[in-house]
Length: 335
Image (cartoon, helix red, strand yellow):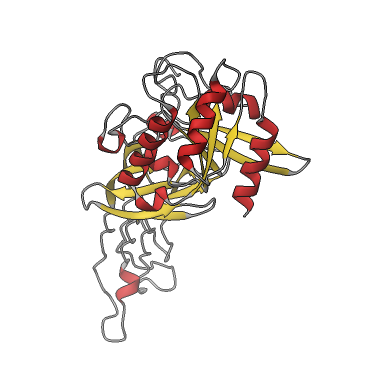
C-alpha cells in the first residue's frame, strides 16, 4: 500500500495530448550583395506524439495512477535562412504487458498490448506549418504567407490490465490459494482465515530444475454470481483469460457449509458464465488442506463425482504433494 492506496492497479483512466506543430514564418534574405533576396522562411517543427509501450518487469498500472495527464512537447517555430523549427519531444508511457488500451469517448479498443515491446501511438503530434519558402514558385517568387502549426491529437483513455501468467489459481474464498503460492514461490501474498484476504492478484515465479520457471497468479476468491459482480465481482475474472492453465483449488476441510463438490461446481459455473472459452482452458483440480482430519473422506467423494478428472491432493502446511503439483503444472503448461 502507498499511503493507504493499493499498489496494484488493473484499471485506470488517463488523459493524453500530443504537441502542437510549430508555425512557419515569413522571411526574406537580406544579404549585402542581394538586398532583395528570395523567401527563406523555414517550416515549423512537428509536435511530439504520445506512445504506450509494454515493458518487462511491470505488473501493475499503479505508476500511472500517480500521474493522470501526459502532454507531449510542441514543435518550435520556423526560422529565417530556411531553418526548420525543433520537433516537439515525444512522451513514452510504459505499461505492463497485457494492457488493453481503450478510447473512452469512441468506446473502441485501440490496441491490446499483449506482449513485451508491443506499442501503440495514442496521440499523433500536429504537423508543423510551412514557411513562405515552401510556397515559392517560378511565377510566385515573393510569397508573403506562412502556415500555423496543426493542433495535436488528444484522447481520454482507459487502460485495463489482464495479467499474463502460465497458471491461474482459482477457487472459493479461503480455498488456500495464497498459502499455496507462498509455499511454491517467493511471493508473499496476505494470508488469513477470513474470506477475501486476497483483494488483488499476486504473481509468483515457480522454479523447477536450474532453468525452467513458470509464472503463477493468485487470483481473488470467486463466489456464486461473480460474473455479474457479486463479491469482488468479475473484474478479476479477466485476469484468468490470460493464463494458459487453470489450477482449481477445492478445500477438503470437513463440515464446511459448502461441500467440495458444490464448491467445485460453483466456480466452474462462474467461469462458464463469464466466458465459455475460459471454461475450456486446461484445468488442474487441487484438493487442499489434506492435513486436516477426515479430509480423505471428502477427497474420495470429490474423485467419485468428478469421474475421470485427475485430482492432485496437497497440504501446503506439511508440503505434502507440492512437488507432484508443480510437476503437473509444468506438464500442463508445456503440453
